[in-house]
Image (cartoon, rainbow, N blue to C red; front, side, top):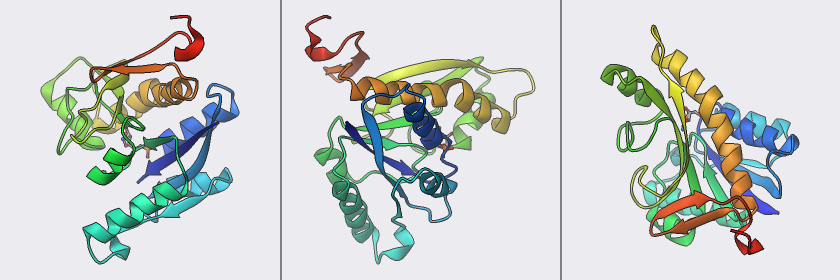
Length: 216
Ligand code: GRF
């Protein structure tokens, strides 16, 4: 079973999509073993509790400096012995040491079609404000592996979402979640859990069959 740690900061709807995916059999061979939040008020922690998943808050407010916070965060991850770390609305810059230790084992869900509306300053609602201000007709969501850059790692899955007349950032965020994020993240976890992801030359793809199945 793929041991999955989910890092959250907010409402946890992407966490819920993975919990439901496992319950409904859309995610096989994976289990969420720990939820880590930097925000003690994150509703995502309540979702973990309701689903009997161990949750822990590692808040920067509880540490003398950034370095101590990073150390505690990495320790909380290591303790869970993850095969995969999922950043699901996690608003913390991942320490370089953690990226080095879990190379190609950290994925993130970003609410746009990378490389649009991503990178420094583009998170949460700001992503949708950017798309609406630019006047793009199509946006969407991206699941990508995390490397040392911001939203720059190999892209695993993307799904387009149409922008409609009268969309506000809030309406658009909800549509991107419903029509893209909550579909892509379970799909990505299931593919990783079942050996159907190949990463080559900083690009990755999902295979029809397991890598070691001999059937390409
Ligand atoms: C979502 O828009 C997600 O794309 C972004 O953070 C927001 C909150 O997600 N990364 P959640 O409801 O906490 O999963």
